[in-house]
Every structure is written in C-alpha cells, then in structure tokens.
Image (tube, rainbow, N blue to C red; front, side, top):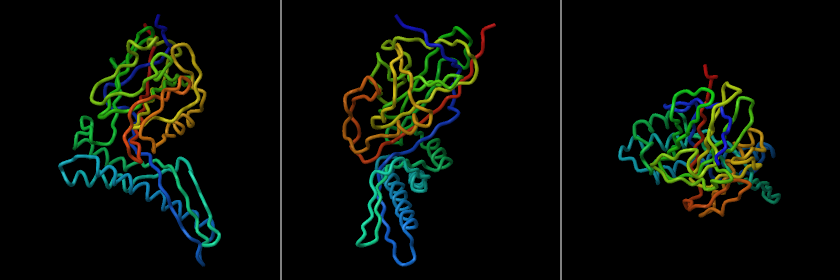
Length: 296
C-alpha cells in the first residue's frame, strides 16, 4: 500500500526559479617561489593555474562533444565555459618540493559557465532537445497550484541520459530524499522522455498537508553517478542526515575518473548504469520554490 507523504507542493509549469549548469572535473596547477614570491603567494598562483586549467578543459570538452552547426553560437558556448567561475570542491593532493621550492596542487573543481552567455546559446540552439548539448534537466508538475489534500506528481526530463537525486525541503527546513528511495533505487534516466515522481515503483503519494507555506523541490542531475550523502530509511523515502550545504557539496562528490558505476547502495542511493568515459561530469541543479494553501 502506498503511503501519503505530507508535502507542501505547488509548482511551476514554466522555468524553475533557480537553475544552473556546470561541469565537474579535476585539474593540476604548479608554481615555484623564486626571489619575489612567498610560500602563500606560490600556493595561490598554483591554485589559480589549476582553476584555469579546469575551465579550459571544460571548454575543450564542450567544444568536442556539442554539435552546433552555427559556428558563432558554438564559440559563444565555449567562451562561457572558458571564462567560467571555478570553485574548488576538494583538494585531492598538494605537494611542496623543497629542492626546487615548487608547489603542486591537484583539485576537483566545479566550472560554472557565464550565466547570461550559456542561457542565450541554449535558447538559440535548442539545448532542451539536443543530446549533444551540455546536460539540461527540466522539472515540472501537473498543476500550477495545490491545496490541502491534493496529490501531485513531479516530472523530470533531460536532454540526454542522466543520474538524479530529488530532495524535498519542507516549510520547516526538513530535507527528505524522495528519489532514489528504498523501493526505487535506480536513479539513472534515459534522455528525451518525461519521468514521473512518484510512479508505479514508489510506495508513496505526494499529498499536500499542513504546515502550508514556502518549500523547495531540488533536483541534482549529472552525466555520472552522484556522490553519496547521509541517509536514514524512513518508510518509503529517506530522511536526509545532512545540513543543506553538505547535501549540495557531497552530491557533487562525483568520481569523475570512473567509466562505470557501482551497484546501488540502499543507504546512500548511489546507482548503477553506464557512465561516459571522460574526465569530466556534466552537472545540473534545479530548485523549484513551492507554495501551498489550505483548502477552503
């Protein structure tokens, strides 16, 4: 028997309030002290080089995988990634070589392309239906608004195959992972089709109930298996045992050097499916801000 889950869910049939596309990759940087550079300055220089290399690699990857006939649009897309904002997710390795006074650092970084540029290219080139374009995931629901007692469904669609994690955050800030869940552990989705949450494999319904207010449905998606987060089984779903910032950070803990995924783990929601053989993971995060109201 399916269980109702009390959710405050009123969503959008248009674009989400917040959406982002990015890539996650590894890169290395090196710098030497010299006469006019301190250790701190040397480390900073190496970090900047590593971040620059991450952006350049992402641009090269996008250029080689995206099939856009319009040359100017393709160059605009590459430019958006090459000039991206780069955030260091993890320092994988760092070494000082005393003999040469040189410092080397290897990082895992997220490369976030220039928002205005990638949005313009995406709209002009039709990324939503192009499997060669950077990963783009759309989230919708079956109605624009909901009142107490109503059930709803969420629909997810990607322009190419993707792994997904769906987190629901209630009005009090409690996070629940509704996908993958104890009864639906596979979170690998074919591209180009709509996928519903819940569907016949789930053991819950999304039923709107108090407290009413503003809530969120967050969808994390990637071309490779997502990083594991702390979860506790709670009936047909998982309670999330992480702070919001840790959910986002740990989800980005993607093993980008893998060529295939491991079998699913019931405690973490990590799943198995073929993953592209590349030193880069395409990543997308979308957040729907949701509101509900009491029935009259």
